[in-house]
Image (cartoon, rainbow, N blue to C red; front, top):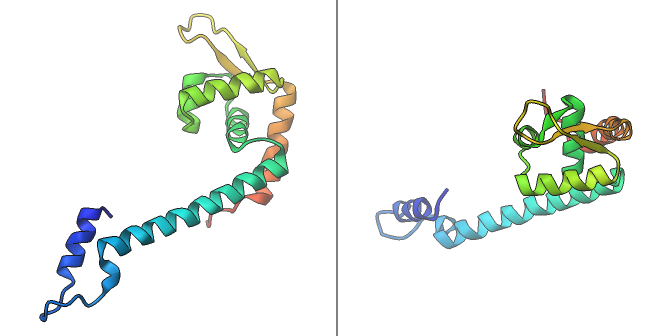
Length: 144
């Protein structure tokens, strides 16, 4: 809901005497409630990020890359970015670190103008498989 629509709600929430029946619909109250909800969500994200790092010794971004490549290996970074939703600059930096840690390999693709194909190393594949098991117990499961 935008501030403009909140203001419209606040104005339309007046009784015949001109007094508001619920002061919680004011723009100030709506902003306060939105910020409180944001803080609650961020607290949950931070707690989950910490739990992922502690359980796996990897960042959530690294986990996402490893699991995405376990699902479909040997893709270029553009495709990997689209599949994971990770921004290009962040992805390039993370892939570079993971190559140094011998989790990923970058290789040229013949006949492809895009310069790199990203694949899991044997170590990276083992780590990714372990992540699936560890995170399967840690992350909330979607209701079926």
